[in-house]
Amino acid sequence: MHLDTQTTIFMICFVYLMLHGAIWLALQEYRSFQVKLWCVSGIISGVAVVLLAMRGNIPDGVFFYGAQLLMLLGTLGRTVALRLYLLPAPQGRVFRAYYVINAAYFAAFCYLIYFHQNEWAALVLFNGFYSVFCFEYFRIGQKLNQQHASLGARLLMWSGLSFTVSLGIRSLAVASHADIEDIYAPSWDQAIMIVGQFLAITLSNIAFLRIFLEIAERQKIAATHQLAVTSERAEAFRQNSVVLAQLLQEREEIIRQLAMFNKTAGMGALVASLAHELNQPLTAIQLNAELIDSALTSNNAEALTDDTIKGALNDLLQDNQRAATIIKTLRNMFGNGRQFASTFDMNALVNEVLLLCKPKLAHSGITLSLSLHSEEVTLTGDKSQLQQVLLNLVTNAIEAFAPDTAQQKSIAVRTQLLGGQVVLSVTDNGSGIAPDVAMVIFELLRTNKAEGMGIGLWLSRTIVEAHHGTIDFESHAETGTTFTVKLPAGSEAMVY
Image (cartoon, rainbow, N blue to C red):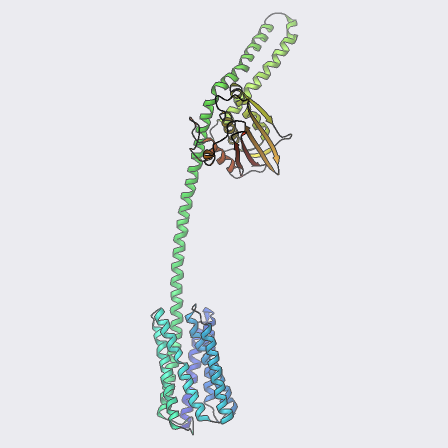
């Protein structure tokens, strides 16, 4: 019977090794530290059981100290592996308590064996300690079941109870004898302990596997749900981007239509003066053409070389060029509003716009002061749009003077090249901008003019910002207003 008890203990070792090895192979694809800790700890416990069944065949030092240490490490490792299921809840304090309790137990066990050779007290301590410590299986399973009710958590609770009850009965039975002659002696408490160990080891391994797979399945479901949510969001973003693109296209079209509307309004204000301006070169062309025609039909050959004819031809060409320039500028400024990027000289742009504005300036009795940068000021953008910005600023400057003002009215236009930026400024010595108007002057449909539409300055800022520039102003009731436009200089194409 002595051999049968040891053989039974060897069978417990076989269960340890078989179940933990099977779990390791089954879950190897997950590459989980927790699985490795559980399985390695179980195998260590199995080796410890082998040593505990070989009393008399191995040195007593290996039996008492080596086997005890391995059993301690195996049980502690498996309990820590189970505790990892409770993450992300903090476990640091519990782990430190585990280490202290296990170290204290091992020190007490070694003390009883080494100093007192009291195997009976050591066996009572052994069974009693593991009976209490393995109750952690039940507590961990209970917490897991509270979080997510599952078969794995309930099996873990039953395995903890099986460990605790069977080892507790064995501890009480050994304590009641007050002595022990043979630790392998067959008895009813030994039988309960062995059956309880078989049951507890089997249930704990099945529970560990079930809980691991249940958590993996929940994570898989959560990942699938998250993927579905992400896909829905991606589709929503895609639809929103399509809608946004449509809105941006509609915005650009609205801006284009407003630009055309603003151009039309600006053209109406210039019609009378432009008609007068164009009438002068056309009248001069007519007179010079009649003079040349009269000379050519007079049969006087000497008339063909007369200085009067040469002067008339020269004036004819100049007047024709002047009219062509006005018409070309009008055509560029009041075209269809489509964006067209080109590289041009800001000084030339200013001259072209002011050519249209000079008749109205003269009619309003305003002196124009022009200060252009000494060299070409090159930039890239939509020339037509920037012409409209300058036209808006000059028109606003013309309208900035009170009708009954007695002071000499003047407007100054200036171009500069500062730090890689083209700086265009339009200054008037009018009555300035009221503070309440200044706060909203660039907003759409905001104006302080009786006949104003509130489009010009808003559109000017939109155009300038689309060209990666800025527009700002300073205004004082005593000195007038200065609008300043800053644009990036250079010939590189801009995205706008």
